[in-house]
Length: 115
Length: 113
Image 1: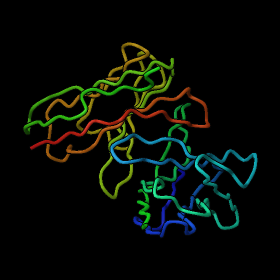
Image 2: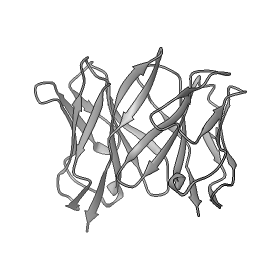
Image 3: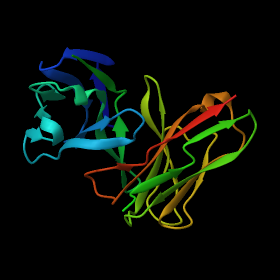
């Protein structure tokens, strides 16, 4: 089964600094990869997705991620952090079984933005 | 358009009690899922359904049962609650495609004492 590993359970950046959240995947087939964001006391929402159309994927709120097959990575970046970016971010990969698709999530990275 | 609605939002149970969590979606989605979220563990799939009348086990199904009698509803039951089931539970739905864009409810915080 496909899996993802997020490096760093907690990342702190200063407002205006680069945001880099790391995700590595393990997959025997070309994966579909996702980043979801969870704001406090809310459910998750889709930030961006990779479905093999383009290796650089742009998402909402200025985030983007680059699929690198040679490094088995799908890191999430944003050039300049904003206070409103403080949230927990989850990398996920599609798994299939019994004719259906499910997501397998990483353990999450909590992003703190320091004023 | 409400999306995915979960009830209740909070619940406290004593060990051994039973309860049912209700999830309702108004997007006519085929697939529905129940996840639990625990600190440092991410989200883990409990059960899921690929259509009305169908259910399947996920990664952590023990101690839970589910039913999908109507397409728009997916119920999660705890027959005999245990402290290990203290968690935040999320319901989600999607249209069943491989590009799994999940729509989540706002969660149910459950404490089992």
